[in-house]
Image (tube, rainbow over all chains, first blue to last red; front, side, top):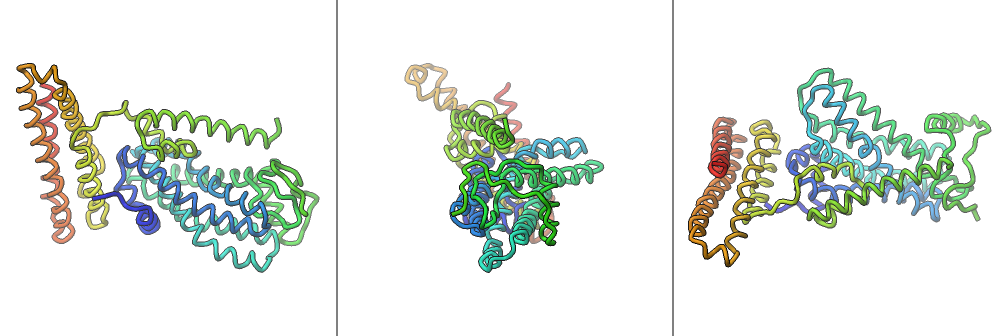
Amino acid sequence: MSRPSILTLTSQVLRDPQAVVVAHDTPADLGWLAPRLLAISGVGAALFGAVVGSYRGGEQVLYAAMKLPILLWAPPLLALPAIHAAWRACDVEVSYRRLAVASLAGMARAGVLVSALAPILWLPYSVEVEYHFSVLLFAGMLVLAGLPGLTAIAGAIPAGGHRRWIAATGSLALIGLLLAQTGWLLRPFVARPTTAVALLRPVEGDILSGLGTTLTSSLGLYGDWDAGRDGLLAREPR
Amino acid sequence: MNATTATLALLGAWLLLGGVTALVLARRGQPAATALSALLAWPVLVPLLADAAPRHAGPFATRIDTCFTALRTALADPSATGIVTAEELVSLEHALRRADGRIGMVDRLLAEEALRADPLALQLDRARGLAADEIESVLRGVVQLRVQVGLVALAGDTVPVRERMRELGARVRAMEEISLA
């Protein structure tokens, strides 16, 4: 039997990522799968990023399309060794290679799902919704697409061990925290139409302070904190 | 160093590690796409670095790939869950690959003009033929295993599959023991 085409693989990670993990557990399989699953997740995330950047328009479309795949890839890649160690500490025998394939399948699944959500996000963006609401909408959709991706990783963990809930909660918390902080470091994704366009904004505070500000601002309570108007490749609005 | 510079420095370190991983994988004969993937996603490709040095594949490498990919796909079906463990399958496949690698090594020896003239070469050639026949036979057994997995899906009796798996494992182990003797 020949290897599946990239379209078949896309369909498999969407319908049954566990089957992909089970059917590909040799080193040769990992080498074959990695570029394909990264391409699927990268293209999906870039499409979603382009829609997110369309809120501001101009160069922001390109910048957001470049940064979204990194946002999708970074948390599982950074967390992988820690997740492996956490499950081993709970006496669950899972190979690093199996977790790596599951992470790739999870990322690809999330990438396909965010690209499917892109038109839904585009609709409110095209009628110019309020900025803070657009940020929350973006974050919500990312979480919505990310959860089925996480289930692909969780499904690869074999039964057994003890106190599994510690490893499960720790893994989820770690990925969530890394997603949030990576998003904060790589911002802006949704830029205000009146602000400067920048590839990366200076790091001001952290994700928790930023979320607090966004929530209060979305309720109409504005404080004295505002996004800086400088950053890497920053350009003032015309 | 401000925070944005620190972010860029971390990104540079990530790419540097990725570049080294990609270089090592490329030198070990991995396809260019795999090596390039390591540039961005090296943590998932670390298991490929743990693999021993590049192995020379034998004449059955493609057939082993084909047989085991097909078997894994059949076993991934929900109706076939738990019949054969991933470890059993990996162990059988690795043993077959080792046997295939040994045949590949013998083939390279027999291809040398000087060694072919040696009186022992005939004996080596005969032993190579026997080993190749055994691999052929085990690969046919793996194909039959797929058929039996299909029968399990309909009849639900997993015993024949487990017995066949045990038999194949024993035959491959016997090949290893003979070669080690």
